Image (tube, rainbow, N blue to C red; front, side):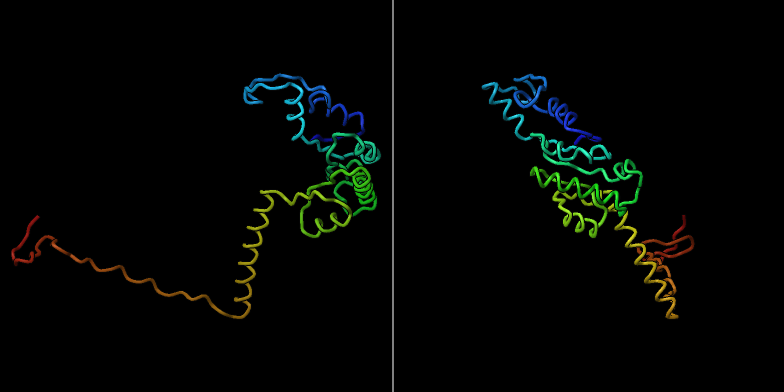
Length: 206
């Protein structure tokens, strides 16, 4: 995943660094750690190395949106990924994700992906946004993030506790406060203090 991809020329330059020949111009070294120190036909090994690699071009500028169709047309580009905050800033509407300029850009990227058979993705903050973007043609949706999901869960729990307590207090109920149980008496098994007698009736001194 590479940020701020603005045109097909940049996408091809990235692919040159990502892919081995004949798909790119990545430097070659074989028979070392990354291929398990194994041998084999060179072209076959390079093809095997190229096969699992994927390229996500992040569309985060107005220029990237303008050139979305030519970027999606590049063989080797697998997904156009919208960086929504950067894109909104580039369009002059920072953080306004329902602004017409932003939504028009989103729809253009989705059309480019559909036309060239590429995945279309972005990070989504909530369920409603996920469904909306699925309808717009986005088929690679990343929901929230670990920190934000944990934060939302904790906030929901704390808010629920506070609301429940406020509801009970509004109804005039008082919390039950029982007196604490007295501490258990010492058993004194086999022990006696100064001036006490042991079980045999003899006085014990310390």
